[in-house]
Length: 286
Image 1 (cartoon, rainbow, N blue to C red):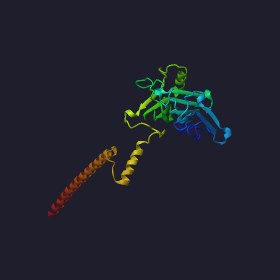
Image 2 (image 1 turned 90 degrees about the vertical axis):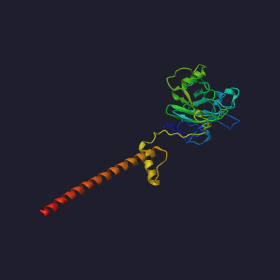
Image 3 (image 1 turned 180 degrees about the horizontal axis):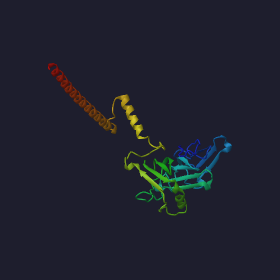
Image 4 (image 1 turned 45 degrees about the vertical axis):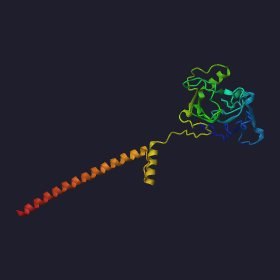
């Protein structure tokens, strides 16, 4: 698990919770599923402090999650498969109900869900995509949560991005049976299909997240210079090679100009020297 914001300092197992709290996300292999989220304080490692929230008492679909993450005072569970072929899209085991728990209200009333399989998207076309299910882990960055595509009946590559600022309004409208086809003022639910770029980009099961700015140009220049200094080579087929060639050509040109200037200078001095010698000889003759 990763912590997108420094306010969260907990050690976590699957689902990060409030400070000094550890929680576990509910999943049990691929044949049995359950929805009991468990948490306990790290500074009191005893059964007396264990708390359990059974998500299935809120919604029978809420079981079989893989991974989770935290932001502000919320824990989010990533939906994978719950075995509910009777209600899931296309009668599959996988589902797409993103489940958010308010850590300050660790009860059924603190649970909200957003089903990305039935939510209108900020894509073109914008209609819901029933294939947005079967995710494996996710993370938060800035104002967005991201869900990593894994298996929805087939290996797939649709990364889902959900605007945190739209979660409540979309979840509330789904709960009331209202349409999510309206302008929220933010980015709502979007997806990026990596399989359209390369059909091998499917079935992801992990991620690396860099939240710091990219290194400055000087970093890459120093890296190039160090490479050339230690190996004596220039990376082929790169901008480094082109820049190095230009630099060498410029250096050769400067050296050529220097040599030419030196030869001209020596020639002029020779002429002056010969002229001075001629004058001396003529004086002796006189």
